[in-house]
Every structure is written in C-alpha cells, then in structure tokens.
Image (cartoon, rainbow, N blue to C red; front, side):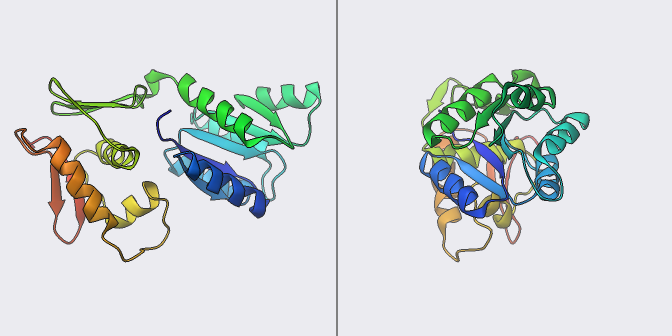
Length: 229
C-alpha cells in the first residue's frame, strides 16, 4: 500500500498519539486535531487521503465536521470512530457523509485495513491518482514512477517527497512545507535530511534525462517544473 497522509480528529490525546505512532510505523503520515473546529480547518486546508474522525468531540462534533466538509465539496473519505455502536448510530454516521464506521474499542489492524480500503476507493476523478510534469509521471494508485519509457524505483519517503513536489509543480516548496507534509515534523530538526533526500531523488529522476526537472531555489526551497517553463 502506498504511503498515505491521514488526518486524525480525536480529543483523547493518548489515543491520538497511539494512532499517529502506529500509522507512522505502517509507513504513513498522520496529522492530529484535538477538537472539531481544528479538525474542520485542517480538513479544509490540508491534502489528506483519509480522515479518521471521532464522533464525540469538543467545540464541534465529528458528524458536524464531516457534514460541513461535504457541504464545501471536500470528498476526502472519512472513517468515523465511536463508542456508539447501535445500527441507528452507524446509519446516522453514514448518512452524515461518513464512508465507514468503526466502533470503539477497536483493533488497530482493522482500522488500518479500513483506512487502506477507503484510500483505494478514492475516485480518480479527484485528480489524485496520476501526477505528471513533462515526461515524468507518478501514479499514486500503483505507487509507480516513470520518466518517458523508464521505470524509476523510489523508496517510500522519496516517493512521498516527489508526490508532494509534483502536487505543487511550478511552485517553490519551502523546507518548512516539506518537513511538515513529508516528514510530519512541526519543527526544524537542524539536520540535512531534506538535502540528502533531494539529492537522491534528483539522481533518480534527472540523471541521464534532459531537461532537469528538480531545481533548488537558493534561499527559498525547491521546485519541480517543466524545463520549458
């Protein structure tokens, strides 16, 4: 399964921390919102593959969050978590715009499987499956990368880095943006981790090809763009 970016909206910080850690160990990136208002804002502004939403939240309940996202045409799949497990409760959650419903307590393996299913179901019409810059193509569904007729093998973090750069093709992406969205760091670890991965990625997608697509913008960040631009 390809790396996913997941938003967890959960007011139980211990439970949320467990999910963030477990999802990271499974190769995914997870952000956390501790209440409904914060979750709504992040859901509107972020680029997530799946939302994991607790039903009972402070400031705004989980169903209201999902309803508002759907009202604003945000179709990100949502898995509802709740201690309310009656049929009527599940039906209400699904009718509010949830795509799946998991009753607490739950096994992480089941949650992960359900999240993966929701990500696979996401419609290609959302434009999130195939990314292309010049002759470089990245397919999120098959987790494959090609440049021209050449297949390129990337490590999971390299794939996520390229995916983020290609989503923002033509735009300068800062180190802070990469740390937060690719590494899930909300601070600068003062290491050269980005430089190392950019160097490895450049050697794979640009070396032996013309023109170069991945560029360093000194003092600003990085940009991937068609050489003709």
